[in-house]
Length: 336
Picture 1 (cartoon, rainbow, N blue to C red):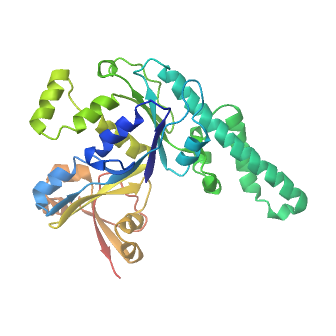
Picture 2: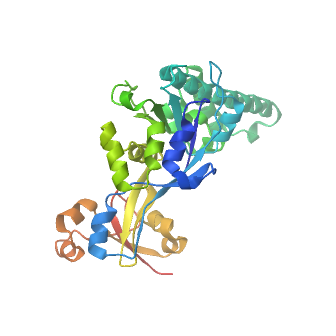
Picture 3: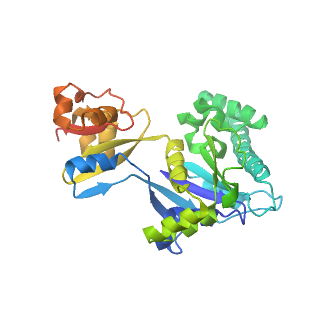
């Protein structure tokens, strides 16, 4: 799953990208970033594995666009269109533009861009109807009309999940249908003071000091980093929240596998079945799926041991219809 980091020129988005990616990324504008997963450590204590593996999110730093009252521009809008999730950085430190105005400008840019796509397609459908009505998909047309009505009312498509997730519309890659995280890039002394908009469906707001986070990420000595944070009165980095909220916006949960060779976190779309989870590991596991041996995270914390959990009936055998829950520890039984 891929996330595009973008914003107006001078917003500090590259500072945030570098903070997420780390100094070792160099001049590359693409990075795989590990998702914080505290549930790996308790499993590691029990299994003492050779390897611990976290899930990852791919971030791409898109060159900035617009600014000073201008829109983002078609280049930026075209570049972010293929991505699953958007991370927009708002300049809240320079005083040049109000971050709230930037947020609203970006929302309008996404809506106007989508409206142009819809109108072009509906015009083509109208022409096709005159030539050969049977070539027009009435379901697609109905959905596009609903999308146009939303956009003309200046509402992003993401506000209606039935439209945003409609299979018939997937190929249009509507920008306003994508989940989006707005990072309000402010100075460190403003983080607890900035008033953020309320969250909406598919839209999250966080305050972060990108320059500060980048400086902290560049400190490799743990003691030096702690002294730096103590001097500024910082209790924790905001990066974990940025990454975790991105993961949530992507509609992902985590299931776990554990053994002596590896304890690993795996990303999975919320609502996926046990065979689909097996397929994340390897397609052969999904094809040959028989059963899933499942221990919920709460039951693992309760018993701290798989043998005890099995004796108490907490270690369950689930079939093909089982919907995987966040934190499930799973062993797959399969036949290839």
